[in-house]
Image (cartoon, rainbow, N blue to C red; front, side, top):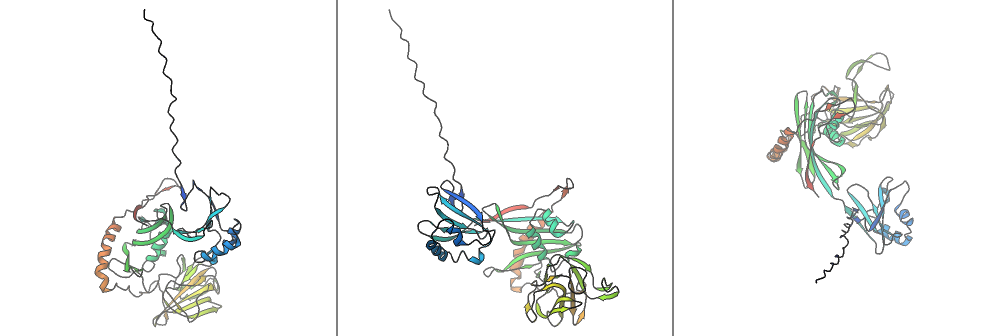
Length: 418
């Protein structure tokens, strides 16, 4: 008789456990945060390189050696409150400073090796150049409307500078149009480090079209200039106004004087702006007067050539010096209300052949055309830019409610990486 045996049950093995993946390294200032601790702060008034290291128990002898080694990178006059810095500690030696990091600007930082052998070097951060383009309509003022169309304040301000010679921005009309193509710099792909250049711009004012293209006259020397579609220089002999931001409060001609209370000839144009606003020389020339009278207040007068002179009245402060040359756009004083003035403004006066005239009605010297040797190259250079500019759409700002406008953003194209 066969006797059956009961089979032994198989031994149950524990389920296989997957090991967690190793932590991914994260880097800051080039240091792996798995291995280093980074303590960040900003400079306070009175902070010095030596004091910061002394507080980390670095010996005076080593601090002196580091200061000598870092003198080309950490100049005391550039050590300003608010600038970021960091202490780097090796996790294996958490009580001993390994590196000091100083960041004077967004584009690079200074690495000071403190532990063991000392060293100092400048490290450039990764920079990405992004091309942006956008367009819009004038509804209120240039700066506000450019920004509402999705572009930066810097782009709006540069646009006003480019057309400073050709368009009177005080008399913009609703639904005037603008377009712009410009490059912005980004650090580590995320931090906006500002506008690099405006490559092309367009403005339609009172139905008339104006183009501007940034042309490399001499790339090696970094010499560029803005010209229109026909190769005429955008820059003219005179700026349209002595202020960047202003409101015209009184025109050239007869008026009732607000202080003297009588009709009197007003042979200038009053540009109102806050006290302290920079006043620009509208053209290059020589300062022939800089002083004070009871009527003019603080004033400056400039001779530009044998034909033209300009004068700027009621300054709170005179910056230009008598007998000195000034460049177009150079700040010669600050807006004020000295002399016979009821509020802060600059009275801008303009002479042609010794006679005061209204600069807003005067036909001023024409633009200078591009050098004939460069004309063919220029026209070939701007042809694709003009085509691109013409294709840029205008942002339609549609109001969803009183507080929340919907804005079409400009197009972004990455064009270069360093």
